[in-house]
Image (cartoon, rainbow, N blue to C red; front, side, top):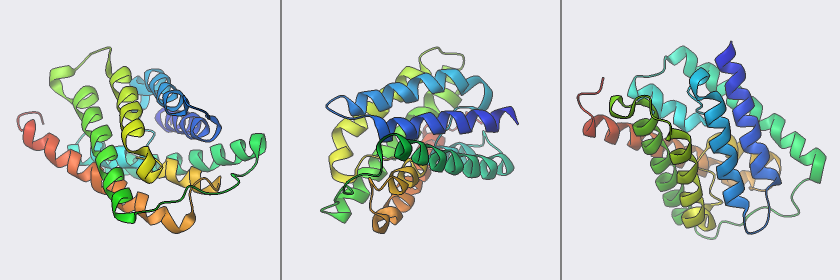
Length: 203
């Protein structure tokens, strides 16, 4: 039960940061929030806070299907709770982010999620980096880098739970929700495949 509570807390604060962060430093604030909740919960749940990451870890063989299903439920519930919390503080977004090019948005989400899941698998699940103390920093800065580089094309979710929360907050348009499901899970699958190819001896 502790790992499910941890996943709820981490996902909640991540999505809340997405909703409340603003200004030129928004991406850095979101990345920093992710970093600190990863350090807080990594030793308990693995600190996925992202259904796509959970899928990648499941395919990598470091998570059971039963845990993955419960993680997904908890992550989405936390995203919804965070969205309602943000709406309480600041109300719904005045207008959703407009995606001008669907293809570019899909590619951006695939690339961003791939990078995030690939880094997580290598710094948090690989034998070669076992016991390191930099995993939270590496993951947080991956979100900062990908959000800064690709966020302008898709909104920079790289996380179906973030996409759900952003849609509930009306930051994202519901008509685009499918983009985040397809692209984020697709990027995670690619990351798991590449990890297993590059780390063939790491079972």
